[in-house]
Structures are given as C-alpha cells and as structure tokens.
Amino acid sequence: MKKVFAVAIALAMVLSLFAISSYAGGGICFDGAYLTNDADGSQHATAHVPNEGETNLTNQAAQGDMGSIYGSGFQYFHAQGWWSDDEELADFGIQVNDGEITWGQKIDDPNLVAVKDQTGHAYPYRFNFTLPVQEGEVAIKMYKKTAAGAEEVFHTLTYSNSAPTGDKFVPIAVADNDGAPGNAVWLNEKGEWAAVKFTTAAKLGGVSLFHWASNGSNGPLATWKLEVYKFDTDIDTTFSKAPVASKSQQSAGDNNPAFALEFDAPLDPGTYVIRLEITNDEATGVSQETSYVVFPATAAAVSEDKFEYINTNGVMFNFTVVAPDTYSAADFFVTNPAGGSEPTPVDPGTEPTPVTGDATMVLFIVAAVAVALVILKKKAF
Image (cartoon, rainbow, N blue to C red; front, side):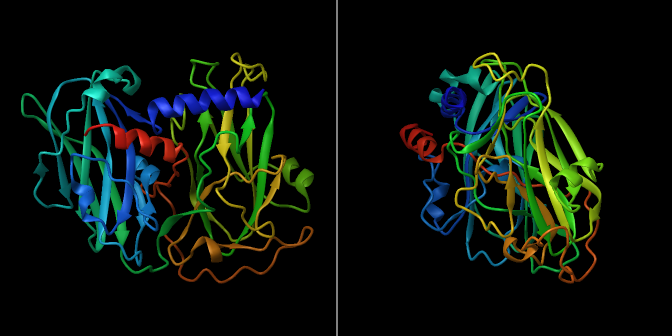
C-alpha cells in the first residue's frame, strides 16, 4: 500500500522539482542553493551542477535562514530557481545588505511557462545568481519589478559568517535527508505514530522537520501533530505525561506549510522524545483515498546510542533542532542514558537568547536531487 503512495509522491516531486513555498501573490522554488568555490555558477545560460564537497543549502534557502556558514571555506553562494507571480514582471534584482540593487536577474524560460499551472501562478520566471560570501550577518534581498516600475522584495536570504559566541541559536540537523520516498516513515492511518528519543548537552530552542503530505490530487489533506516530551523512566510513562511543547498542522501539500516549532523559552539540557502522529479521520490507509504524511529518513545511519527510534520499522527519520551556535550535531547530541536516569549535561556555556520568530529553523531538501539536476541540465535558462 505504501509503495503505491511512494510512486505517487515520486511523480509529484519530479513534476515540481522541489517543494514550493507559496505566498499571497506568488510562490518561490529553489532548484538549488550551494556554497561553492565555482564562480561559473553565475552564468544565466545553464544551471549550476554542484561539485563534490559543496554545501547544499537548497531548502534552507527556501525557508530564508541558512544559519551559520562560519569556517565553511567557500568563496561563493549560488542560488537558482523560479518565482511565479500573479502579474507580469519586468525584472528581478539582488541586494546584499544595504548595497545597490543589481537588476537583470530575471530569466524568461518557455519550458517553465509551458508548465505554469504547476507553479500555482500565471507568470513564472527563473533566477540564477552567484555572490561572493561576505563576513558578518548577511541579508540577500530578492526584488521584483512590475511592468509599471514598482519594486518589491519577494524573498530574503540570510546567513551568519561570524565566529560563534554561544549567545544565539542556530539550526542543527541530525543528518542529510534521504530523497527516496520509499526510504521514509509513513503515517497514513489515524492515530499512527512514530517517535525518537535523544539527549542534549545544551538547551533546546526548537525543532523542525521536512514532510511530504497528500495534496488533494491523490487523497484528502493530512492533519498531523508533533509533540515534545521530557523523557521519564520509559516510553509509556513518558507519554502518560503532558508534552512540554506541541504543534498541530494542516498540510496543504509537500512541506507546505513548512513545519517549525519554536519554544517561548529554551528547554533545559536533558532527554526528550519527539512524537509524530497523524490525526484526521480521512487517514484510513486506503490507497488514493487516504490522507498521509511522510517524513524522510536520514541519508545515512545515525548513532543508535544517541537516537532511539520507536515505532518506525527501523527507519531513522531526519529532523532539525535549534541549539547554541557553539555546538555541532556531534557534541549537542550525547548518548542516551540507560533506563530512566539522565547524565549530568555538559555545561552549555553562555546563556543563549531565547528563540523568537526571527530564529527561523532550517528544513532540508528531500526531493530527488539527481533526477531534478538531470532535468535542470536539459532545460535552457
């Protein structure tokens, strides 16, 4: 049954290339966003094909916050994709921080126009640009210009290229995502759930994750929830208590809306359990009639000492946390305690600033990258 759903999702992903972030009046899709040392990616005539070792920030770019890139060793940031609007546009422009707007970024692509219904708006245009990496806090504003000459920012990309201080939060992913729908955790019957237990060495500011979901063309839209529990003794005891944080979501499509749960105040270091559950009555488990929600697996196995997956049929689903910027995934996640005890956490250092709506969590690309890049190489920009 789930293989049928996997085929449906795979086809949908090939059509749309990557998840679309929709807004009133338009929608944006990033075909790719990379930290690179290849300046040739700035050429409008062709899509940039990432080289081995480049850092993929595609879905982070779609969400707008690319986090800290300090010490990455790359000279350039490259982005390519499309914006689809409800009105005809004259141009795109790029502005870095408070610098001049560089116009001439709009690319008219007849191949994209031919499938404009897939973009959700009447006037789709491509963009393809490469910028030098700068130091400090960087904001890249993407402008559109209407035929009448009005200028408006339609997307902003931010990153930090400063030495970590420990007084702010940044996104940390458990791993890269596996882009194959068959290698995922599927929830498609009301009440079906999956969970993961982990222990943190520092305060936890929030959690987010990528999801595929029924989008109306092959089943009702999915309603699901994510709950965060403080671990207590065992899983049954843990789930008998109230979660320390939770969020329900009505999916409008694949990763739409993007899921991010931000805490009003960071949670103390300790052992936590994330539980995912599909909740709507239309989740019946019947192919082409059901709601479903799907969470991608990690691209490679992660430490079973640090991540205890429960009710997932052996699949390790991927997720992202927000942690003090002095931590990496390697030292933020520590070995889970045996039984119900917890280890003394590592001193997190300087007290981080509580997470706010400005600390946007990063979601990670899960589309079929290899397939999409082949398509991109064949399309003229």
